Amino acid sequence: MSDNIKIAFNWIGPRGPIPNTEVPNMLNLASVTEQVQTSSHRFWADNIWPLIFCNNKEYDLSPANYLDGDDIFIYPYTLAWRIPFLNYFYVNSGLFEYSHTPGHILHQVRWGKGYILVDISAEAWVEPGHLNAMHSYFKTNHIPLNKVIYLTGCMNAEQMYDTWLQTQPIKDPTDKMKLISFPISQDSLAIYFNVYGPKIPEYDTEKVPEKLFLSWNRRFREHRIAITLALEHLNLVDRSYISMGKTDPENESVTIERTFNSHLTADFFRFDDECVPRFLNKLPLKLDGETDVNKMCQDFDDANRNYYQNSLVSIVTETNFNAREVTLTEKSFKPSKEKHPFILIGAPGTVKALQDMGFKTFSEFWDENYDNIPEPRQRMASIINVFKYIGSWNDEQIRDFRRRVKPILDHNYETLKVRYSTVVANKIEKYIRSRYPKI
Image (cartoon, rainbow, N blue to C red; front, side, top):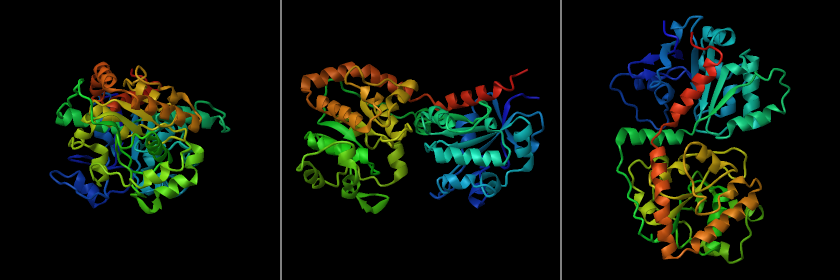
């Protein structure tokens, strides 16, 4: 008998398992049937088995009804955007009830060697409300918290969780969930490299690009608007490739004026009276004109490569800035795909999170200490100083930079090919084996 950790699903078809998160529907059944393709953008299929576990020799796929009391197993739930996160954790109508989780699975998680895996790695939901809802739901259902593994896109999830635990009346320090950070966007790009073998971007060290910065901004965020206004203040917008709309693409009633008139100038940066109207007159700033969100996130066809090759540095504006949760979305990894230097802007610790994954950043060339500044206005001021410094370079300084930065770009390109899902699978295996070592 194998002592591998089993990944258990209620329904398994010829092309793989159906999600445990909900009762199968026609699209679920079609998606795991031989030679059948689904094309609905409103449909999602569980990919946690092929994404994380199938290529690791420590795990086996198993039908849930084949498990016995001696099996070590994980019963995974992949949560979807279609249902608000907190709805999954309503007592008496939450995750277990909605999915019709078999009673023997819950029994073996409570008393045996079963584990629950909750995956929402596309989001960074580790705020007190999220954690409190999960704790309450699992405790009400008599699930030991140390039998719950939570995959999240928050890169400082353990730190956030430990800080929250200090406010809770927990008697047993081992009675807590296992949080594991999973930047799923990196894994998607690594799969793209390994499956399709894209054409390697060229990096001409002697070329002085026409543009200084490249910055993609689709969703409105106050820090993204503040950064773009700062570039206008420094007379660098016209020297850059920047995307920025007049209205929020997901809510046309939200205008850019309403967004920055609320708290922007007070929170981040003070602009002169002429800067704002001058900038507004330039909107909308469009680059490729792409409107499909999936294509924007993936950029697998290299359609935007010319923007990278004709600009000096990417300004990556991550999801969070004035927040504690560190995120690394596709925006953080796309410059490495294109062998492009980048200034990574997010919550404190964002640059360090990328470094911890093995990527190299650019403190040799500009000050990255802003990543350590907790106060948003001071951090923004430090970032703007970086823009000002790079904006002062002459042609020879730019060529010198491009010659010296190339080894870092080559390193990051190779690092991007390594799937982070392997790290996640190993962390999960180590956590479970600490309680049930191999005989």
